[in-house]
Amino acid sequence: MTRAGFVAILGAPNAGKSTLLNRLTGAKLSIVSPKAQTTRFRVLGILMHGESQILLVDTPGIFRPRRRLDRAMVAAAWGGARDADLAMLLVDAKAGATEAVRAIATELGKSGRTAWLVLNKTDLVPPAKLLGLIAELNALAAFAETFMVSALTGDGLDRLTAALAQAMPEGPYLYPPDEITDLPDRLLAAELVREQVFLQTHEEVPYAATVETESWQERKDGSVRIDVTIYVARAGHKAILIGEHGSRIKTIGARARAELMTLLERKVHLFLNVKERAGWDEERARLRAIGLDDG
Image (tube, rainbow, N blue to C red):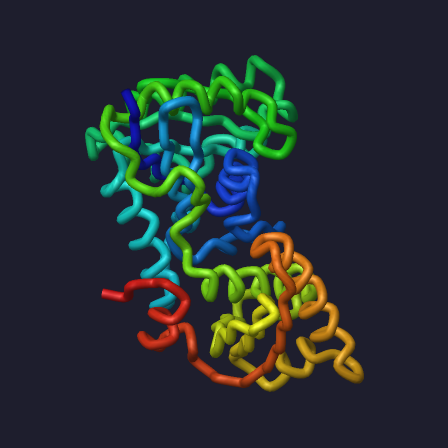
């Protein structure tokens, strides 16, 4: 009998949700950076285990929203949890029960949804501290299961995967078994460019950039031409992104192109353009373009 179901990965910013999704699926589906709040919308990873199809939903980190962009991100996270068969609260065990973690656990407890607690980075924390953290969070929500893992090294993920496979409802597969995500290639291309913006500019262009794929042209030789625009909020950010004699934007393009060629398994011609657009994070059209439904 086949099984299939949705699992929402919830957590505070920087808990390791994207690292966990990528590690479980074996593919670069969700961008990863040392900065919090890099995931902006729901990312689906399709994991096959035995006769089970586990549909992992990586959601934006839940935090106190300020801008329209923030509100849309938090709404996407809770929307993913409501639509799932199972919610997993991923907690950075080293950071512990922060205010944000306690708030999410409390909300899960009120919802009455089936929820699992997954402690990440447990290789960095003494066992006694882990037991105290488990007790503290279970007082806020009655977690059906608790797992201790390291998304970075893979420790504990075999046990977690097997348990998820068994927990999925019986029924037909919801996606073709050979697919790994439902994200359009255009959105994946934009996300891989945005990841390089984070990695190459560090603190200089923090959250003031968004990336959109403007055109996607299939070529007769099997390659693809992708034109991508990076929108920034200030003129100074545009200069930083381009770099001296275009050096930084060339590096961003070269590294994103290499990631895309690996993911798409074909030759990619990637062209980047940088435009200044103040207040993009309050524009409904821009939010829809990056996959957020701003209600």
